[in-house]
Each structure stands twice: as structure tokens, then as C-alpha cells.
Image (cartoon, rainbow, N blue to C red; front, side):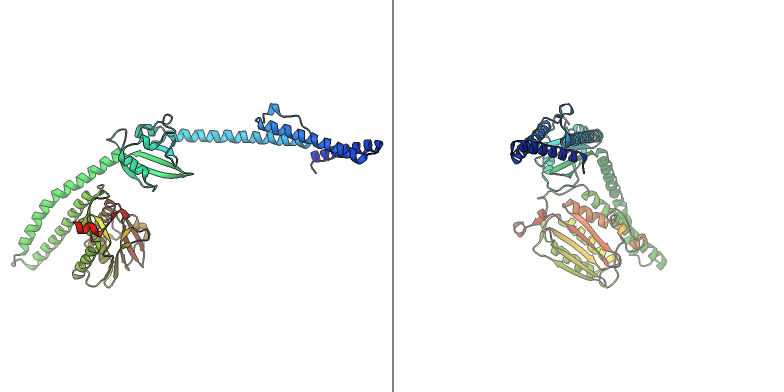
Length: 438
């Protein structure tokens, strides 16, 4: 038993005994025991009230009420808990100060705001990149400070984790990469990074590829023209003709590479506006591509097209045709004769228009999937060259999808087959009324 509890019970027993003896002397022992017991209870309540009052006043150690017995132990436990809590607060305060110091010096602008878009915290970099001051602007609405239309549009988007490139509100010549991250309890973290140099390098690369491709187009056209003229000469011996045919095939391949590079330079980093484009009957394109391939390279493949004739897409018809043709042609090239290729154009479970091409070919190993849409990347270099591929088809498909606000999805299982899909946003659905008005 707790010694202090034993002491308290001893005091209570002494009080009852004193009441009994005094009451016995006057002939009313029970009444006096009740009176003494009540007095003891009042004394306990007074001690408890003093402790409560002390706690309400802040529980300062110097103002602790004088107590004895169990109440003294209660006060001691409170002192101990306060000391531990003080240490924990100091530890948390020190940790928070270190975190704030480190976060404040991050090179990326970081702004934390709540569900009402009220700024709760920002770092030093936010001042130079976004013109948001860490002290002056705390408590302000972020959309009152970032007033550019593209900024307001991005802040208004519900989806987090989407990265966009926006001109800096401080220096328009700078380009910022911005991303929103949900931080729990209704908080959102906005992170902005200066990618001006990266964008310049990208634009230089695009310009270089486009210029070189344009420069190569003319000599290639001349070479192909002369080859056609020479091959029309019936007097050429067989070995020479075979060599010239091989040269012609390689020049055709190089011509396709140049054309694809030029197409990529037009697509990359050039998104269509939400209302930009024309209504496209994708089902008609798919049937046309399927019929053409069946007459040429896919005579021995089973191509099935399941397309919703009433589902129209708003966009560039030539680009969508290129994406569809590349996906279906790839399925034909990288599967064996007799393979089944299923082409679908339907609304998916998210009510978004989706184009998918599924084959039952050899499939692709997982380590290759994330690199398939890179330029010139090949899973099997030798086989790809033999099939006549340029290594640019999926890169074109990816950029067509991104230009239309969509994304390229790849799912493949070795030994089972592959599925390549383009998921477009629902805002790209066009109505039949638009077609009738054209």
C-alpha cells in the first residue's frame, strides 16, 4: 500500500476515534463521529480547492499551496510533469527552429497556405522568385499576391502533384517550375524552382534539331531523286542494282527520321488551348489506318477496331492520326504473324476519352517501360533496326498526348502482351453539333 495513503487512512482513523471518544463522554458517539468526519472531508476539499486554484493560476512552483499526505504527492507529480513538459517544449522549439532555418534557406521558393489560400509560412527564396515576403505577407491570400492569369488558373486547380512551367511574376524573363503538394489538415505546399537555364538549353536543342533536320531534308530529296532516276535504267547489272536499292532503302529510312524529328520539334512544349482544334472522328481514322495496314504490312495480323462513332475529340486531326498510326504500326511490327491486335476508342471508367492498342505479342520487361517514349530508345536494337523503326514513334505519341492535355500509359507483361493507351481529358470531348456547324 502507498505509505501516504496509509498515513491518510491513519489520520482519518484518528479523527473518527477522537470523535467517538468525545461523543462517548457526552453520550452521542455516532453524532460526534459524523461531525469530525465531515470536518475532515471539508479540510480535504479545501486542500483540493487550493491545488485547483494553483493550477488555474499557472502552477508556478513558488506559489504551490502547502499540502500534506496524498495531496503533497499530487503536487509533486504536477511539478515533475511540468518539468518534463518544459523540456519537451524546449526540444520541440529547438527542432522547429532548426527546421525553419533550413527550410528558409532552401533554393526553391516554398509557400504554405491553408484551404482559404491564406499564407501560413514562406521561405526566403519565395521573396526573390514569387515576390512573397516571409513576414510581410503572412496571413495574406496567395491569390491576391500572384495575380497573373496562369498563376490563378494553376492555384484554382484541385489536382495536386501536377508540375507546370510559368513565367516568374518578379522577372518575366525567368521561367519557374511550380508544383502543389497536399500537406494534411487542409494545408498545401507550393514549390517553385527557377528552370530558366534548363528551358534555354531545351529550346536550343529543339532549334538545333529543327535546323539540322531542315538542312538534311534538301540533300536527301536530291539523293532520293537521283536514285529513282538511276534505278529506272534497265541496263544496270544486278549487283549494282541491289546496292542502289539498299542505298534507296537507307535514304528512305533517314528521310523518315528527319520528318519525325521535325514533327517532334513542332509538338514539344507547345500545348493546345482547351478550345483549340477541330472535332475529329477518331473512329473513322482508326478504321482507315486498320484497313491500310491490312493491305500492306499486316496481311497476316488480326486487327479488330472497337470504336465509338459518336465520341469525337477536339484537337489536331493530323497529329491524332500520327499517334494512332504509330501505336497500331508498332503493334504490327513487334508481334509475329497471326497475332491479334485490338484497338479501342471509348470512354473509360473516369468518363475520359481513351485510345488503347492491345496486342498478344512477346511483351516488354518492366525495366524498359519508363524509357520507351524516349527518343531513339530501343528494347532490342538489332530487331528494331531490322523492322525499319526510327525509335521516334512513341516519342511522337507521347508529345501528341501531352499537347492535347493527355498522357501516354504503357502496360506490358512479358509473354502475355502489351497495351499502349492515350488518356485524354474530358474537356477534349467534342459534340456532334460542332461537326455539323463546320
